[in-house]
Structure formats: structure tokens, C-alpha cells
Length: 417
Image 1 (cartoon, rainbow, N blue to C red):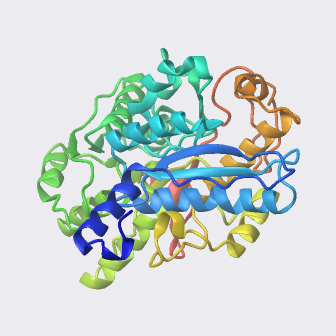
Image 2 (tube, rainbow, N blue to C red):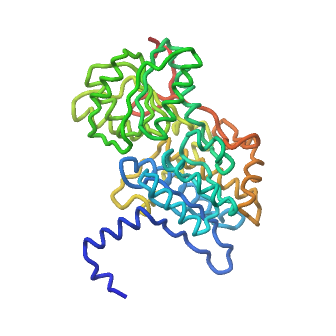
Image 3 (spheres, rainbow, N blue to C red):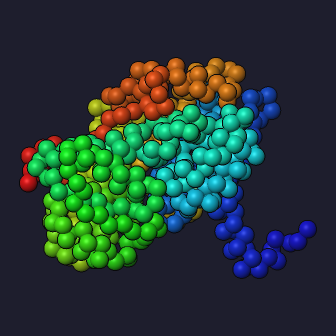
């Protein structure tokens, strides 16, 4: 066997990159005399332009699961996550899913992103004899909620169609009927685009204009041409179906061009990170890029401490620090975020599903266990129900920038045209 100390620097870098992108991290094994852990495979972006979404989602999940495991697990079993990086790209997500199937994970869990999750859907059908299900992905796309793959996927969060319909309704209520769309040119962005189009059609209105960008765009992208194309139609509001870096760059270029109309984003844009980028850009250019911004969320505000689960989330997140297996040592964890809170809720529901299986959990019983969850109190003011379908929550929350954070909209009158 070669001496690892003799591996060249180039070879070491290539090997490390291959392991990070392609291979999941093995979960621990049970101690003697204990039941083996239940292991769930999670493919997400832990590197690249959208890495904070994957990292914070994972942190929220692990903050709750470590709490549960430290207190005896579920029916005496540990619940463990096998994370694998896909960089928010479909092909690595596909390879990760194949590996998870080979590793015989209990289920796929909390995948991140529409282009990655939709790309692996045929594998769920291929492995249907193994009862391989995808549980609670961070995506609101329609393919996860439609035939032929609907039966293999369970969603906790609302759909992008629900988010865009709610946004369009609120904007029209405030007199803003000329709505344009800036979107990522892939399955995610096109779903958002289509959601806005459908919602406007319900009011007998056309889309004012649109412009797309390529997935993976960074903050240093120049969107002046996209701004010009959108503003030719003189819209009075813009809805974005983007990710945090690209959306921040677009907002910056829109404001630099002198346009002050409201800009609204969807939950997947990770509004907390986007706001950080806009504040930093504003400080660099001595401008304020944080005004007249709206964002939908699919979880309550992490400042809403009247909810018992928000209080538990804040307590456990404040205590949780370990993320090197997905983030590396230089990553600075975010204290709280809408993304990590969604991961936290996913973990709570996962634990409840396993608990309902008793001391003999089996993958084939996942549909039965989830279907039994009706009116379940998750501690956020909206009960979770899977009895009539494969989506547990439907509430949409509206936020805007106030006191340096995205907080609930208190008064829609100020948005009136």
C-alpha cells in the first residue's frame, strides 16, 4: 500500500475534491448490544455559489437530531444523516443517490434544490422495489408534487406555485398589476416563472416582462442588461426566482440604475444571506440596497418566540456548533436563519415519523407512518397533515427588511402603489 505521506500535493487535492463532491460521509455504527442507527442520505450544496443554503439546512437538522440522540434516540435508535455534496448540480446529486441506494439508507432526506431533486426522481421509480422515498426536500417544485413521481416524495414545505400565487395576490391588492420576473434559467427558476404566469392569468393579466440568468451566477455578475430588458415594460413590481448571490447582484444593479420599485423573492433565495450581501455591497458603495424588498418564507420568523418550537430552535441552535463534515473549518455559522429553521422542522417531523413506527421501523411503512400524521402540532401555529396528500404545510409568510433583518410584514398599506 502506498504511503499516504508520499502523495503529491496535486494528487491530494484531486482526491479530496473527488471525495467531497462524489462520496457521502459514512454514518457511525451502533455499539455492541444496541440497535443499529437509522441512516438517511442527504445530497445538498455544501460548496459553490449556494453553499450556505446546504450548510445551514444541515445545521438546523443536526441541531435537533443531536438533541434527540443525546436523550436516547427514537425508540432506542439513533437517527443519523449521511451528507454528500452535490454543489447544487444535478449529476453529482444523481451519483450521490446511487451511492445512497448502494449503502441501503433508510430513506433520502432533505435534498436541496429543484435541479438536483428533479434529476434523481427516475431513480426513485427504478428502486421502487426497495421502498426508496425522498422525504422533505428543500424545493417547492411541481415535479415533486405531480405524477409519475408524486408517490415517492413527501414534502413538508409549500410549493413555489403557492408562494408565487400568494405574492401575486398581495401585490395586486396593493395596486401593482404590472409584474415582471427575474429567474434562474433551470427547473427551479422556470417553476417560479410559471407560478407567476399562472397566478397573473387567474387575474386576467399578462406578465409585464422577464429575464433569466444561468445557474451558478455570483455576486460579481453584471445584470445591467437584464435590468434594461425588464424595465422596458415599466413594471411596478418584480418577482425573483433566484438564489442569494445572483439575486443580490440583480437588486444592486437595479438600484444603481435608479429604479426603486418593490422586488420580491421566494423562500429558496435564503433571504438572510442575501441581505448580508446587500448590506456589504451597500457599505462598499455607500448606498442602501435593502429598501422595498419583500420575501416569502415557508416557516414562521425565528424571532416569533411566542411559538414553543421557535424557542426550542433558538436554544438548540445557540448550543450547536459542529459542521466541519460539510462546511470546513473556515465557515462562520449563522446564529439563526429561515433555512436552518426549516431544516430543524424537517428533523422534528422525521423523528415523529420514526417514532410512529415503534421498535420495528421498516422503509415499507413510511407511507403508512406519514399518512397517520393528521393535525400534528409542530409547535409553529399550523398543524401538519399528510392524511390527504404528500405535503404537510401550506402557510406562506411575508417578510421585509426591518432593523437589519427580514421580519414579518406588519402593514401592507406602505406597499400600495
